[in-house]
Image (cartoon, rainbow, N blue to C red; front, top):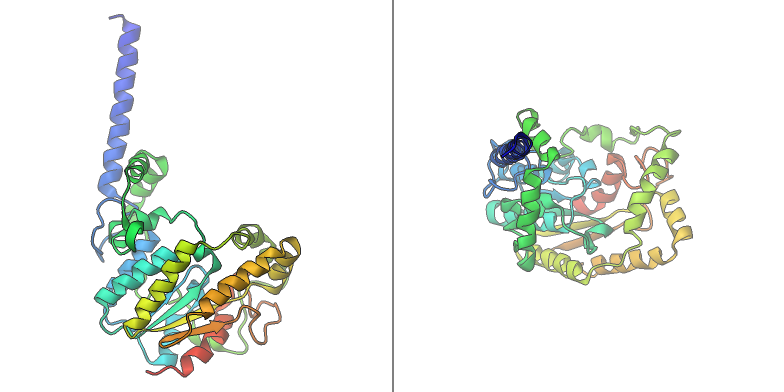
Length: 337
């Protein structure tokens, strides 16, 4: 065997050894909780924010109110909800959270939170679209085991994709930085919001009046694309069944339908008039769930008093915590405690 071939073989062996070492390191560290998180460990550090939501839930077995939402739900102050209702509240909302995360978390709560009385469901149009569920949900054992039916099944494609993750440089970087990752929030997202400031009529948002039109334009391309897609019959049924399941258990479900910034909605209607019909179909589906233990707060046509300014909006999609309070207050003040 000549020296060139030996060098080539040695290099190939070294590469395999290096890749194998990285894969083993990533597997052991498991920074995204894809391999070693069958249960909910409160001491575990992870970069998986959806697993962190489950940790918040597990850390509060006495919680009586859950807030479930995506990035819009992160603007809800759990301390304000507690003040209004007199019930201990945690906010499990996470940016990008889809329907199946909300289903998984609410199913876990039904098993582990005997005092659960109310679920505030911050509805999103995109959660009923036929989109690929985030791997942070489907690949996490603790969450995926609480998904409905076929959604909880693991396929050979999943194993292949997870194997690829083990040798991905992003996973390696996450594994290396795992010790510095933030732990879960005790009350979940929104616990850093000042409830008095958010409820004050003198509330001032963090976006300036000059920057708000810019922020509306920045988020428009991404979020408007969702509003042009047809609703998924499968996900619509999963949503309907989960709300009915919670209500049948005696849990009061408050579903909030928030609008988009007036300029955002106006631009969307000009570019794609069909989107208005799609959204109306979605609103009708949600409103159809109103009944015993289910209350729908419909602000699709706008929030009373909304002038499109910084008191109500951070950008084209996300209402401020003040605007959130204006929407939720009527549905909570009359709720039994």
